[in-house]
Length: 349
Image 1: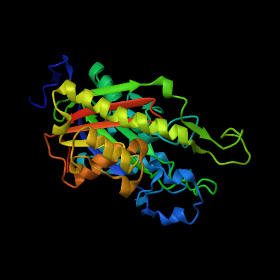
Image 2: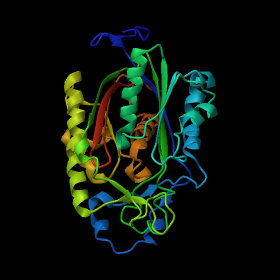
Image 3: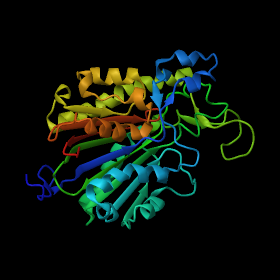
């Protein structure tokens, strides 16, 4: 098909492409030794869910989510020009820890980038699968309106401010997260088409992840106790079982619809929670390690930013061939949401 032919023959709807991707990692890498000086005896530290990466990045105290999106978008502007971003019709943002709890980052991102989009949406759910969820939302808007381009931005910014708190940095999970931001540019054409997307919500699992101060104090109230995601060993077991199942289940559902076997996928990009998940997921699709990029030891668990950052790193390394099939898959929180997407890759180097 010629790139200017906007019709998806399977659905009779305009094709939408992920034409560019970029990312940003803040500051210098933070070694695991930063955390080991504070660590204390903790049974859960032996759990595979919390085995630390070799490194991770932490955003600075005064570095905002908008700062991170602006820095992640800089390569897109360099490649495509400021006008290409300024003229974007749809802006979707996801921020793990909103700097302003009253409003999202979208309007300020638009101001910083000189944009005046018709659609500005801040998506708080989606968790580690938010990038795929936002691809789905952007594709729907582009297919059903006059909008032609969309910028999606996901920011993970909890590692520095939350997991280095004095009462948190000695916990087993503290060394695992890293901070980073990933952005994607979508266009209504078929130059690098999204072949299929699957999103599923599992509301029965929605209450299994908590954000707690470790006391009766609400996170916004003054007093003792530092807020963090809380885990119990029984919940970890449940999350591990769900994650093991959901990521390959949705990935293979997409593969089935586009007529490709999992083992024939060229590049499989998932969220990056820990080494065991990554191994189990590629085994489920019968893929060799080289076709399942792993950024965990370099970046830690980047939550929603894990997929775009990993894909950007892999593409810049020259390991994602144009016209190849890239499969994305992730699950969120304690398993209340999961998503997968397949793309005919056509991104830049």
